[in-house]
Length: 424
Ligand code: GLU
Image (cartoon, rainbow, N blue to C red; front, side, top):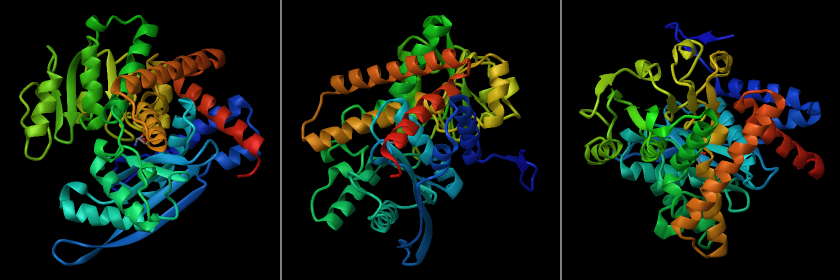
């Protein structure tokens, strides 16, 4: 049942969306209820209220979470999000998606996610640093190179990871690079990590286009979101010959039938005062709602959760959707897209390039030996291609869409480990 808020706007719960797909995959697999009961809910939910001194001398309290969903395949892994929308159900869903994502790409990690309820755009660099350090201190018993390894997510970047390394190293009394990934290069980061999620989205798009017999030079694509994932996905998809006809960010959508010059748009954002597309003249302005319904062959939602809903799914014109964001489609919208025969490459597969290269970064930190960008990209592309082929074959085997197939692959893997190990 869809819940509406006081203004009548439907509210979706990402945790329910995750659990509905989980239940469907569990029934198809015939998974024993006792294992399903373990994996349907998070292993651990840590909530904290962190007091931070602001630049004006006042003390503010920030709501913060770290949810560990599973540690069955290895230490838990997942980003930290700074956003006003952060809430415990969202973090629980995002943590579970990390478990499934790592399993789909065969990365030996469990899943976790963190979040702090704040608007990073309204905070100074000093305030962000104090919030990040206070959060690290508060989560010091959760984090650890062999326990739980954060990374960037919405609203965070390499800078926050550098502060976490520093704070965690102080606490543990030695340099601890492997406690987070997505770090700056000079602090033990990996070449290729910044581009990794967008690159994986491109590899997934290319693989799906081959299945559908789409010719890149005759194909158009709309990308929603122009942060790290959206902008790099758009750039790399354009590089394989596809025409990007629209992009968007918080300031709205920009549509150009003749094609958006993505590199120009990226340069525009970089030099703009508030780092947005506001005033970009490479396309006509459209609303976010119009953007998703534009005529195009491929739609890449790379902004946030709950964008494709039962309200707009029937009006989507793309033949292929590649989910750069986590949870951009609600569970209720899945069957509408299926009826319309739209191929959806689900988030837990399409955006797994980021965590794949995070794993490579962690391996390099532990080895103390650093790879070339060419090696990182070659290995990540191979992982993404194999994962795509495996999920596609599973969807054919069980006659299900690629989302349920990805859940089947992931659940089967994590549940088999749980059965072998016992209770941990
Ligand atoms: N935040 C990214 C994601 O949602 C990356 C997580 C990681 O590398 O640990 O996949």
